[in-house]
Length: 340
Image 1 (spheres, one colour):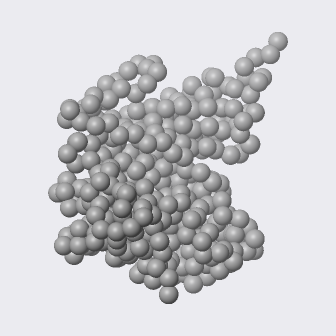
Image 2 (image 1 turned 180 degrees about the horizontal axis):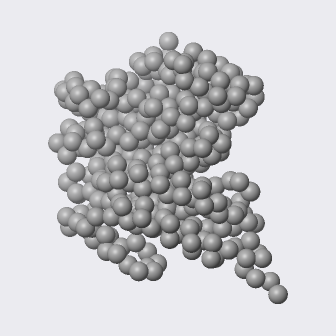
């Protein structure tokens, strides 16, 4: 006789863990949530109809390996929520609900609880309800000790406030908002460089301000909503681009209409110490660095030239660090780098 537990899946243990998580999950619920007992989906009332539903799906990725080793799974899980909220923000949408996916070969209660606490904390921060998801135990799929954290962020946008890049024009200014670190991209490369460097995560970051390499690598994925949403509501932005996989050029091109070409000046902002060290220690070609890392820019805003100074002032007042990093010109749709 082969029981489910013998095959590596302990349902009773999983159910007991879910009971522990309920308090954290329900702490994110507001009036918009329709509570269901044993529901197969999270149900949220659609406010402000007629509106637009926005949805995005992503995972933390290999940053999780560093976070788990450092005992900071909650922080890495929070990064995922911020990532999803930023993906909605660039279209003018506000976060509404988040669904998660957590998986291990064998569910470790401490890991799962830490991840859900991080998700719940970030959901409260961005104003999203954590309405449920999936917790999977798959011994034949995941390596022992590894956890996978992914999720879907849902949001709403008013049709008149939707940002889709169609307002971008030649002459527009491209502004770059500082990141807090690598955010959630480039970690496969970064981890390889760290392993080959001989430095331990607890050692000081070369060229840094006293932080360790591990602390710099695990810097949070910043959420830009508090500073940027008022500008979206006021109609002062032509487009936004979240700098994730593909780097600055790979994401900026996504909001450019035909006939518009962006020129980015890499000398317009200082490259952070972590990213300087990664490129130096790994002898990373510049093209690879630009494609793998955000180079210190987490969000790009495209604005009319007459609005640029006011937008910069508003962002600075909201405690964002911002630089003019480029411009939009007439030409073939794409992004080019200004070289010396």
